[in-house]
Length: 248
Ligand code: 13P
Image 1 (tube, protein in one colour):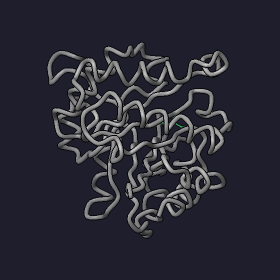
Image 2 (tube, helix red, strand yellow; image 1 turned 180 degrees about the vertical axis):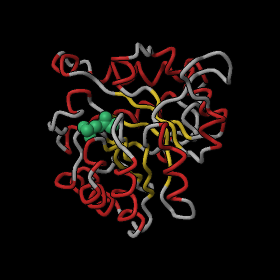
Image 3 (spheres, protein in one colour; image 1 turned 90 degrees about the vertical axis):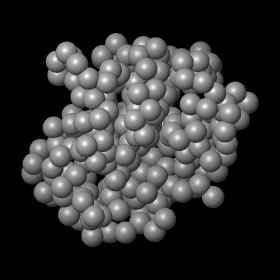
Image 4 (cartoon, helix red, strand yellow; image 1 turned 60 degrees about the horizontal axis):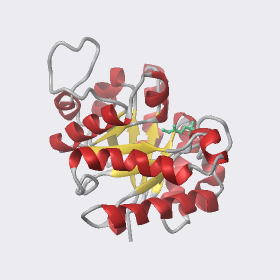
């Protein structure tokens, strides 16, 4: 049995007031064997780390630079994220691919440095509506996975997480049906089993895209859906707690 994992991706949202209203109710809960983490903006990582210290709540970052250190104004390194207490780093989110020009090659470099540092990369993959309409979903997600394996090797996903986030479901309120999500998760797991070294059965596969309290339980009940990467609904403590309860 794979452990369920729920991660909240706050994106570029939040404030000190949000930390104060969102985190204490979350800290009062316990979610059984499920792991729960939050990925706030880098500006709040230190404060969130201090608030959740000693609890089972985990911390993740939304992005990192692909270099160790140096003259890269405005960027954050893996060693900084480690010092701040992060465990996870999202990489290849469709918003980074779309708005910040992150190619499969850059994503692979970021994935590599995250992995080398001992942090856990959460590789985000997924197709656009147009790609789905043209029956290219498998091709797109396999290409995104293969780019990482080509750069790192066939054991790339040994201590990693993959998040399937169909672009058409992100922030749109349009969730993939449990069957649609399960189909792609199963394809991804098969592809990893066929192409990667290591154990595809133990690889956590999260679903992301308009996950909320009302649809979490049915998505999480699917055989190959091991958790969620939650955007909008992670900014509302009631909603987020209910999603985490569905994973417990
Ligand atoms: P929403 O839950 O807001 O659709 O966002 C999903 C997402 O992009 C998580 O990384």
